[in-house]
Image (cartoon, rainbow, N blue to C red; front, top):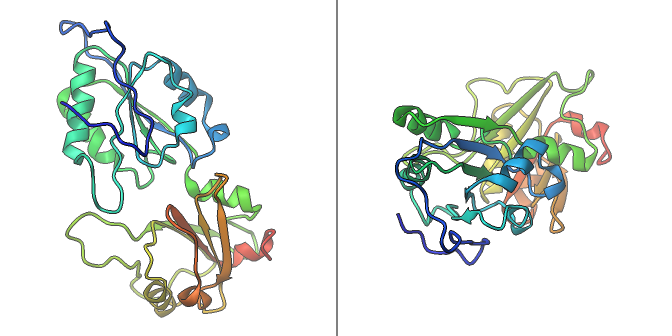
Length: 264
């Protein structure tokens, strides 16, 4: 399968003269979390796999700084999707994983954050199991935890938040309700962390307030967390409607635990 280089992401073809043995036993696919962006937040296991893998299939949000940690003979094939305009379909990603693993290569499917949190890992696990390809999952630091640490702000607090909810406003094609909502009142004493919230902050703010979250509830929007381009917009849920958070990738934290941290 041929994939054209992506100008946004480091691309490295297979080294000249290196070919896979078609008769080799199936290689292993590693679903690896790259963390939120800062290379220093990679796990040791992730780093060691990047240094030894034959093929790297990185998402769009994986930085060049992280890809530069890979072995010089690794083949890097970007498979990212952005703004609903994928360069390659999810089925195409499955095909790449199965193809290279079937040739006996070790394959790192590199995802931003943690592969099991809004990373479509379930679909890739199903494809690997169906094909009988051995695989391993390597956890990464998900954006919610990295943002909280960067802001020195807890996600839970004995007095303010005994529940933590991770949600997203980015759903599978065909789903019509893109604004998170709850049947009945929103759980009390909860911190809501919203991944991929979109840009309609007025509708989002209104929906969450209709779910029972008070307008004065602290809210913080963090753009490009843990990178040199990180931007922080501190407001309230009511103020979110007119706020101007930074560009994607964007994450929202909403809840009273925020007032315990440095943003209070």
